[in-house]
Amino acid sequence: MGSVLALSSGPGHQNWPFSTDPAPSRWDTHPAHWDTPPRWERRDGRLPNPGSFHSLHRSCKDVFPQQIEGVKMIVNKTLSSFFKVSHTLHLSAVSPSYYRFHVEHLQSDDYSKDKDAPALIGEMDSSGSLNAHSLLHLTERVRARAVFQTQQAQFVTWQFETEYRGNDFTAAVTVANPDILRESVILVAHFLQSVSSGLVLGGELVYHRGRAEEGGILTLAGQYSRPNWVATLNAGKGGAHASYYHRANKQIQVGVEFEASTRTQETTASFGYQMELPEANMVFRGMVNSRCIIGGVLEKRLTPLPATLIMGAFVNHRGDKLQVGLGVNVG
Picture 1 (spheres, rainbow, N blue to C red):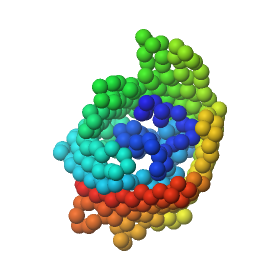
Picture 2 (picture 1 turned 180 degrees about the horizontal axis):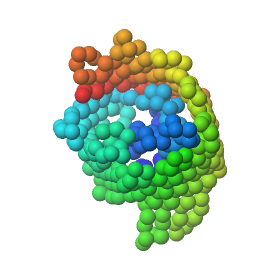
Picture 3 (picture 1 turned 30 degrees about the horizontal axis):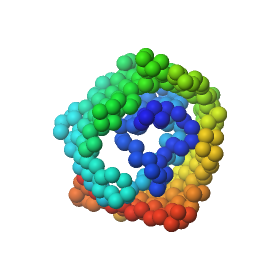
């Protein structure tokens, strides 16, 4: 279901190494500027805007390495001040190999967090699957988002989201896969409120209706942040997701996550870290979790060339499996 699955903030936020699920595409996540509190709300004595519900665990997630397997090459090209394109070629012995074409049309308006705020994003791969993603700033406080996804000749996702950001709160409503003929729909409501300068409380309500079933899931969320650390907790009927992010210094960041799912009856604890070496133009991310999986990804900027070399390896000691990946990001 693509992005519809991402609507639920329950456990299982990422594809673990050695998972049979395909790696998520870039279109399926909010751009960074969407998850950052806007510039008009800060430092005048009022409580800050809490940002987007999707960004609650972002600080910790960014510390963990992304799975890489096989050989991957990414070529990015800026055609003009409004258009960017990228070509991705992935060769793998574990999952199907593919070619992916990605294009962005950029907007530059007075309400954008930065001048490269995406307005339209399109992506197509070699299997014929198409993803379309639209981001619009309707007013200074209201943002709209639409996502369409096809899998070869079939529509699998169509969803619409509207978000309102007040001075100290954020409210969002999403309608996913509405189907009048099948009498089915998924509705998601998010709300976050800044209680103090460091404390944010809120929740998520997911309602789904179909011919055979109807139900809802309520998830409560809280986040407490200080200048160099952030603690976040989501808990509800579907399980719990807790994370802790700490920035030790300019070079080292660490993150700890705990996930429990009532649906799969599984729990996972993970530790990740990121080490930056500016003098060597390198960034290393590593992780270890309770499933006996250890992995790391090294990114090396090949100056003066506009390219980055990516090397990664993940070992599953319990399943006696090894995955090694090599990639080059140009542009």
